[in-house]
Image: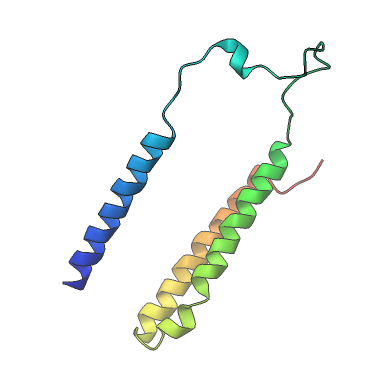
Length: 115
């Protein structure tokens, strides 16, 4: 009964968030002039867009991956009261191994090297 109500609430949440995304993200018609940089009538002084380093973005993604991993590992000792020892240790080892395989892959791809 509890599982069914949790699944129903999860599906309802997904539908509500999806509908909000459709309403908020609806494209409004416009012309090309609307998307140009505004500089008070003066000639443009350069590109209206800025560039960012992809390495910083990849490092941020790796940081978030490990940050979420640590947050998910923190309640593991409390869960040991409700789980068997084998499933508790097995679940923790599987989770840590997935994180370490991801770190190894990022390291091999060179995402953690600064040139």
